[in-house]
Image 1 (cartoon, rainbow, N blue to C red):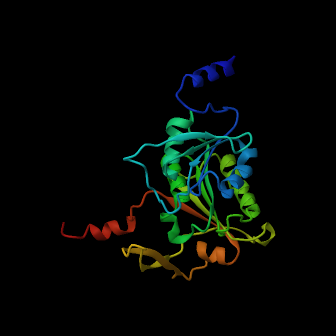
Image 2: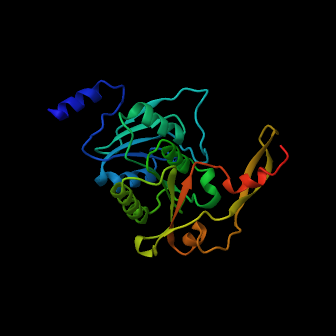
Image 3: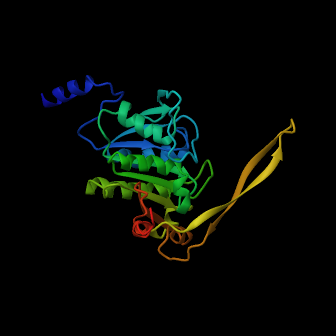
Length: 275
């Protein structure tokens, strides 16, 4: 009787998907598109843990950061590509996907948001450019325990077995604990290699490392100039508690990330200015 009342109440909503209240609701997204091997591997890892719904971009969105679609339309299409899993592709960015999932696709907030598994590193400074991590940050803004997962392998057919074990471990810990600290999401990076090659998981800080950019000036066939952005990643941090150090030594790195960008340590200094 109670279940019938719940179903009737949900059915009257505008949500595209009516959630199973008996299981944890897990939202899956990414930035490599809904057709990537990484998101398929992520779904397989969390599927035994709850009711899984996928909302992900219909095309690659790497490097989009926290971009949102403001002056354009957003389309959502149901996809029949993951057996037993409701999945929707969108024309938007990873952050758009999270917003659409919460605002239109689902009838309640997820208990867990997982983003990835990204093809390539999102350690150190890469976190601010990453669509994968921006989706997780948006989840944290919404008060949802959220994690972005990345594998240090750009190969289209990369081996995600080790990543799946890490995903399961971290997802189970969050669901069992029931939360993450307020305003926090996790940035998880996994070294390339077989599961037996991973030495363990380390809680880390973000390394002080940057891209040293340069631009190759070229001309198209019509003689018009254009630029191709190149660059070299440089690590200036010698600390052994960083994500870069952990990954270099075949450990999984877990960095807690916050969306509050206030530099609190600088406030007292700025208060001394004659403003």
